[in-house]
Image (cartoon, rainbow over all chains, first blue to last red; front, side):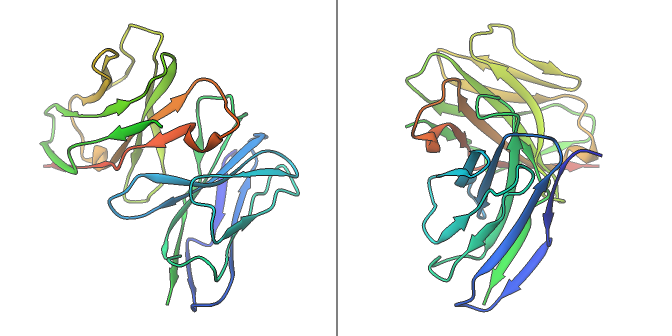
Length: 113
Length: 119
């Protein structure tokens, strides 16, 4: 089945540690995105990538980093510089950034204590 | 910058009844897309329905339909014959049609409406 996978579903880390969230897609989509979701708020864009080896900052990129070495993979690293990292993180993909539809993964809940 | 507002944080509906979720948006553009996404307790985001701004006809997808009022910048979602499986967070989203260098504003989500379905 084609789709987007994110792992793990729940992730716990100590404050001061970097942590990497996985996102893989087998839809052959060019564009991939990372969103952050907090209670009572909509999704906010962290980073996006239109093509391999290229990515751009979204609205709330500070404290996060990404890589896009393969078309299928777009991992997100939450660094110790992110002041409030506890949140639900959603990965999405689309055929291209011109495509009007995004497909979402199941998300990762990150808790930092 | 575009903004999306959902003024109803929570709503409830009786099973088999009809409910309407509100969404308003602010934009200076004339051509764009609007979406309703559903996020059930599993938290998987699912596209419910989409509307192209240049189309006057309201989109319909089975029990889901929209009332798109372009001049009023309103995009409400109507769920008919509500089912228990419709219980979820519903997000209204706006997407510009034309890509710009500053992509950060290209896809904007509202804060969501939590819908409960009562048996």
